Image 1 (cartoon, rainbow, N blue to C red):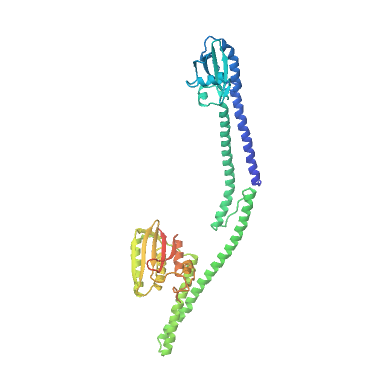
Image 2: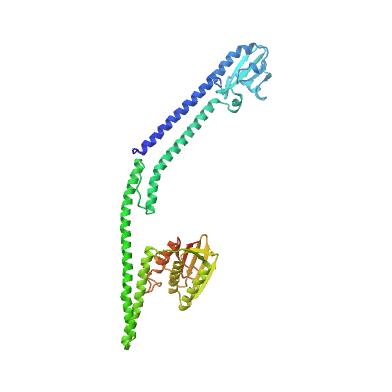
Length: 451
């Protein structure tokens, strides 16, 4: 199939439309003329001829009856002095017809033509329409003009033709555009392993060629990015695991030192080594968490009793709160009896958010946890009574290694807790929402997970 230009296709349909209009007009006019030929349609000139042919008999006949009146004509019979004798006109019409035809000597008044026939003692006035009419009595009553019926039929058929051709043109163009939309959708979804199909329409093919070049460039860029990210994660993971060996050696040697007689100065040095070892363990755990969160956790979803699960979570959080001298207030409403999720990862996400809130809660403050069902989601809200998120934190706190430069910081915080919680929520088709609480003035983190 050759490549066509849109203008060529449009001209093709325009020619089809013109030929269709001509054919519709030709066929309908031919049918109209055939109807005239067989007497199904009476044109105005035939009706005038019929009246002239019947004039002599109408003048000489002793009595006027409807059978003697030419077809499709109405009549009124008057005396010479204008008294109405009878006819087929409505009761209020004879006087106005007499005045117009006899007094004013008129032979037409839209939409009628009139013919006056002078009889011996009477005057006969015939009335007929200024247009072709159907000879069939039923059609004659329904349609006052055969000409207008012809025009209406032609217009309706042309409109129908226009609708059909517009539909076909739209369907043709839509099929061509589908290839373009398919390519755009696949690129949007970063599904780049496909061949761009040709539409064989010049203008669309130009766009498809541009999309294909963009797809190849994007594929190359993403492949390089994916490879770089993968290499980085592998290096981070390898580094984290490699650090475990020297740390284990340091810990073991430090414990051996504690078993010997140490001076006060040596004891302090050993304590520094132990503290540094503990801090290094946190660093290593953070590196491993970063590597796992970036590549995606292995989900092990299961259906479990959600209220019972929350009771276990509450016990764990309550223990954390007591160690930091913070009160816990937890409420539940409209929660589902069952939830499908990875229990371990969900607990980890909650734990990260809670730890983050506890770090910024004032001593003797209260940690508020509210669990409720809304629409098709379970919302777990964790609210502290600290100073809340800064504007910058609301925008970026879910990013890796984000460190707010204001009060919500700590030398042991690496901006990973909320990032990991967000990654877990996204793997559950949920989301993490950050805001500041109007009631406590502190930070509020909402975990949303579908059920």
